[in-house]
Structures are given as structure tokens and as C-alpha cells.
Length: 87
Image (cartoon, rainbow, N blue to C red; front, side):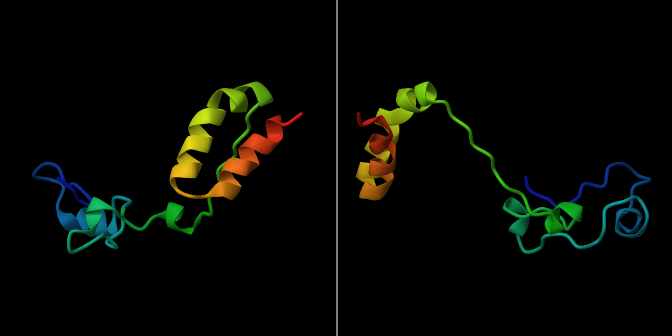
């Protein structure tokens, strides 16, 4: 159910993908295709997440976030939320 590349049909042999069609032959092996992808240009690109919330949206999520933080005993995480709503 997991693979690095699929070669479909009689005229798609593995060397086609390894050398010519675009994908390379650096593929995940030993079952690591469950959690790794083939080597590609994305392997060399740094990615970041951007998160923006309004006060109203954060207020709507506040109780859930504080509950999770407290269960994980990360009081500073909980405080980082609650302090934004202290008057």
C-alpha cells in the first residue's frame, strides 16, 4: 500500500523512471515509503507555517487550547493564551 514510485503498464519499466521520465532512482526502501517520499526538489526547500488569528478567533479557541496545555502540564502555554484576555 506504500511505494516511492508506481510504474504503470507494459511500457513503463523501472529504468524509465530511474533515468528518463522525471523521477529519480533515490526512492525510500525497506518499508520507509510509509513515511518518506522519493528525493525531489522539495527535499531541499525549507518550509514555514504562518499563523494569524484575530482576537475574536483566539477567544473562541481559548478554552480548548488552555485545556490541552494544562493536560500536558505546559502552564506557560496556557498562560500565553489567558494573559491576552486579562483586563
